[in-house]
Length: 105
Image (cartoon, rainbow, N blue to C red; front, side, top):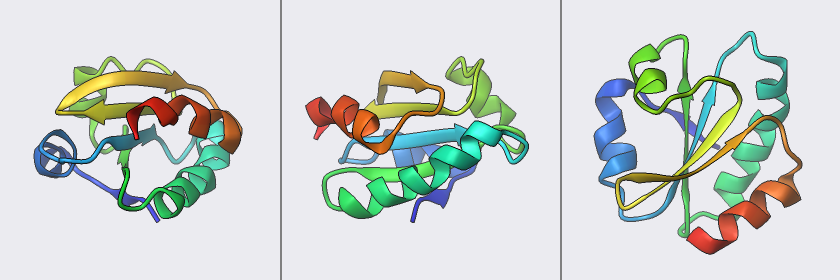
């Protein structure tokens, strides 16, 4: 299950992480976010040891959303080596997300 991270934890949990990190930028009021959330949790379990998965509530952490130009949610951001290397905007099926992640594993 993906864990929520705050602005204070982001550096350690995402940017300094030796593994690639999938960051789910979401909000409670967002219907598509609720559709993607269980998929993101499954990916965290399926890819444990290869990829870390965290969630950022954009309503609680607006600074992070602004820093990474999150203009639409859900936005799945792939971070590798402290850099945002890919953005997937909108709800997608699990297989489509997995396919997009393959090059970073």
